[in-house]
Image (cartoon, rainbow, N blue to C red; front, side, top):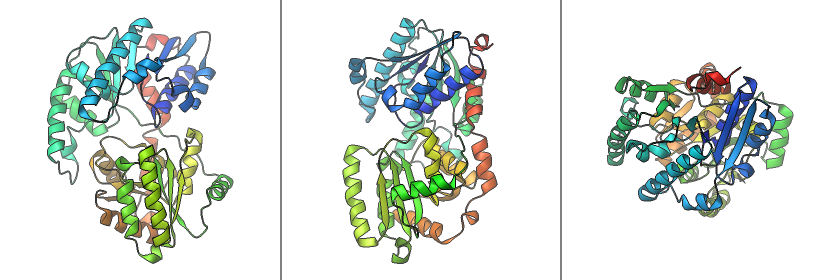
Length: 410
C-alpha cells in the first residue's frame, strides 16, 4: 500500500514513478494507493499511468478515503491542529491497511506520523516511509545560525526520531537529504536509513515549443525572464521578492520579466496581484501571473524558457525540486542560503545563494543575474551531475530494492 494524503507538487509524480517501475519490472501482486478524494482530478497523469500499468498479474487500485474522512483531517497550519491531523492520518492509515489486508505499506510522507510512531502506536502491517524534513544535522551547514525555534525543533526531533527509529514494525526510512542519512545512520546504526533520489526528468529544449510558450504568455522580446514556479506564497518568499524588485534601478526594470507559474493560496493571490500591479506601474517591469496546474510533461518547458530561476524560500527545511528542475534545464538559480537548499546550491554551484529574508540581498542578486553570463555564476557540469544523481530510475529502483517485495518481481 502507498499512503499519501496530500495533493499537488511531487505527490502525484512520486506515486506515478513507482507504478511505472512496477509495470516495467514485471511486479506481480497488488498495489493499493490510498489518497484524498480529489487526487484523481488533480493528478490525472498519475491516474493515466495506473490505467496503463494494469496487467493480469498486477492489480493496481486507487482507493480514495471518504469525503467525510478528508474533512475530518483538519489542518497542518499550526502545532495543535497539525498534531491532531497527524493522529487522524495514522488512524486512517491503520484502518485502510487492515481493510485492504496490506502486507507492507510505504508511507509517502512519514513526517506526518511522527507523534503516533514516537508513542509506539502499532500498525496492522510492517511499513516504511519517506522522511522529508530532518533538521538535526543542520549545524554542519555553512552560515547556519539557528534561532530559538530552530533549537527547540531540533531538540524535539532528536527525541522523537530516537523513538521512531526503534519502532519494531518500521522496515526502512528513505530520506531525500543525503547529509541527514549519514547523521541518522551514525546515531542509529541498527536502523535502515537510505538516501532517496528526488526524481527529476530532463527534457531536451524544443525551440518551437519555447517560442510558442513565449507568445502564449505575452513575454516581450527584450525582457529577461525570471521564473518563480510552484506554490506562490509567503513560504516561497514572494513578498521578499516583490520588495526586492521595488529596489531595482530603472535600467534593470526595463529588461526584467517576472513570471509566476503555480497555485497561490486564494488570500495570497489577491495580495500578490495588488503588489504586482503597483510594481508594474511604478517600476516598468513586466510581470505575468500564470496561475494554473501544469502537467508534469510541460513543466520543463517553463524552466527552459527562463533566464534564471527564483527560489528565495523562507527558512525552508528539506529538499527542493525547483533546484533540480533548474539544474536539469541548465539555468542558474537565486536560492535561499538556509539549510539543505543553500548547501546543495553551493556544493553544485547552481547559482547565487543569498539570505532570502533580506530584500536588499535579493535585489543585489537579481541585478547580478541581469548583468553577467550564467556561466560565470553557475557550473553546467555540476548541474548535470546534480540532476543525474536524482534520476527517476534511481528513485524508483532504490525504493524497490529496499522494500521486502523482491518476491513480487518476475
